[in-house]
Length: 98
View 1 (tube, helix red, strand yellow):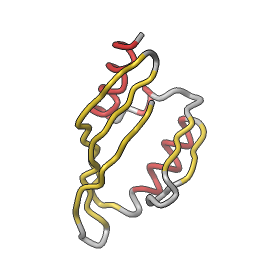
View 2: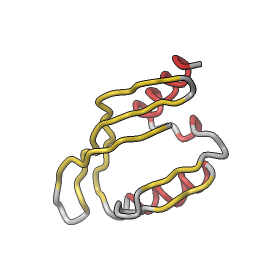
View 3: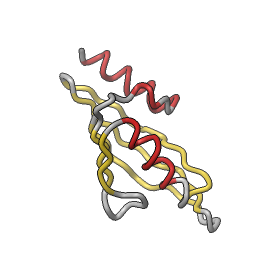
View 4: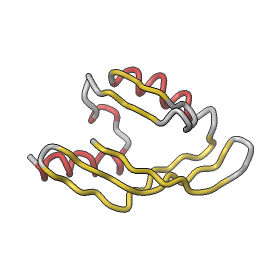
């Protein structure tokens, strides 16, 4: 299961294919981050989170540095490489747990 979970997460980062997300996903984003909050269900992630986040950024790329699997859990660290709609650019560090 570990390798399957890890491979699934790596495929998600490479493709951004939302069909890889569980129908019942709970997507939690720090409230200090643009579009922060909790989104329940794949449809909410697709239609609410990604729609809202793109109102803040003209470019938004997720670049994982490490992907580590243990059992059914996968942890990832990396950076978002972004450009705001006002033209500011930079990297924002992240840690994700799947």
